[in-house]
Every structure is written in structure tokens, then in C-alpha cells.
Length: 328
Image 1 (tube, rainbow, N blue to C red):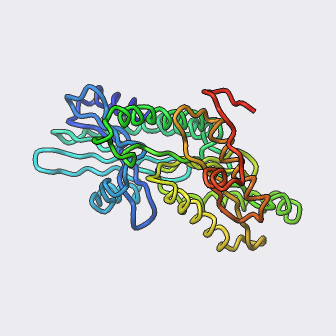
Image 2 (cartoon, rainbow, N blue to C red):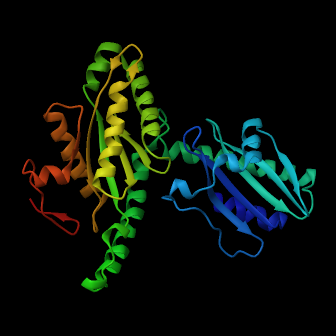
Image 3 (cartoon, rainbow, N blue to C red):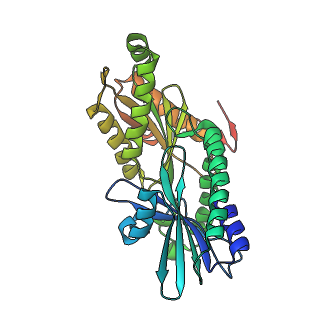
């Protein structure tokens, strides 16, 4: 939708460039992500990768006028030499998330500003419909319907990297650390049924909402967070190795254990995770992580368990898989 918006505005206004920037990350560490950008002569819109390294993205404070546009929720026009930049705030139903930036050789006319404003209202409505269909209404996290597509995009990168590594001779073999590695984790709230039974479903919903906020604070902005239903959450992320993934999930476990939930007090979570493999289907990877979280809950709860470690230690048996078929 972002690409469609910048394409339509470029065709309509014929600017030097038009771009959508989102402000992401925690306070004090916010970065600008380019969602779509088209210059006058571009054939295809450019954008930052979904898994872009945050440290390589522009810092929010490096573009203060964009921040001013977001905070003031108003259109801003700036002159830089022979060019004009017009900034429009981009808002969802929950918050202002970024800016639309249009660069022109002449100051954008009031009538053109009104036209862009009308298009952005339509954009906002469509964005609301997308959020309604793709996000959990309580927590705002992605819902289960969106998981398969994101998972398959991640898995699609694995065969290319795997084949490239295989083509090198042993003496000139590419180090495996250059390959993308993706991890899926299943997060389950311990004894959540007792929370609903003791305090009621309204308090239970508050626990789910607060946990979703803890998840956002515990993971990076580009890690994909899902609520699968009930007290079950899923994380899809890219990490260098298993220790990095384990550290991220342990950070969530610790943050949850340390947080005092209103009326309820302490809540803990059990986590199971696995590396996404070449040829994995969403169901295959999810099942491995789910088995690991089941092991965690059966052995004391409030812990993080790796499926690979459990198999290596003999605490769990690997299920032999052939392509998309599982052999039992």
C-alpha cells in the first residue's frame, strides 16, 4: 500500500521525489525506516529491508523536522536552496507513526496540499482495514493469519544462501555466519486459566495487553510478534546464532517475571524456540517450538527451552521429516 501511495502521488504531482518514512524503535533509540521511495526517474520504488540492521538506519534526531511534523500532527513546508520539502504526518487509529515527504522544485500549492490530505484520509481508512484484518484487536500484534506469509518469505531466503555456501570449495568455503538465520519462538503464559478464574476475563485481557507491551520492549522493532490466540504468542526473528536467540527470549522471560501486573502480581511465561530450516513449512517449525515450550511447562515452567538443545541432550526425540511430510 505504501508503494501504491508514493506511485500515485508521483504521477499526480510530478515531484522530484516522494517517500514514506516510519519512525521505529524505543524512545532514545528511534530510527527512520524507508517504507517506499520514488524519485522522478525511478522505475521501481525502493525501501529498507524488513530485517535491516537498526544501527545502519538514520537516527530519528538526524531529521528533526520529521519529528516535529509527527509531534505537531500538522503539515510542514521547508525550503532548502532551490527545493521545497513538504511533510505530512501519517497516523493510524492508535498513533502517528511516520511522515510522507514530498520534494518539489516549487512550493506545493494549497490546492495540492488539500488533494494530498484527501488521499491520506483514504490511505488511513485502508490502513485501518488492513490492521483490522491482520492484527489482533486486543494487543495490536500481528494475528495468526499473517504468520504463514511472513514465515515463507523468511524461508525463501534460506535455499539461496545454502546453495551459495555449497558452491564454494572446502578451501574457499563461505563462512556459515554469512547465511541468514531465522528463529521461531512460542511464548505461553503460565497458569493463565487461573488468572481468568480468579480475577475475571477483563483482568485476563489486561494481562494479555501488558504482556504484548513487554514483548515489544523486549524484542527489536523488526522482529515479528504474533498473538495466535488465548495466551499463546509467537515470535519470528533473525539472529546470528542460537545464543543470540536464546538471549532475546530469556530477556522476555526475565522482564515478564520482574513486572508487577496490576491486581494479579507476578506472571511468568514458558518459551520454546527452534531455528527455521531449509524446506520448513510453518507447521513444521511451529511444532518443534511448541514441543520445546511443552517441555518447559512440564518441567517447572518459567523457562526458555531450545528444541535443538533438548534433542542433543537426549531429552527429546527428533521427528524425522521428509519434505512436507512427517514420518512418525
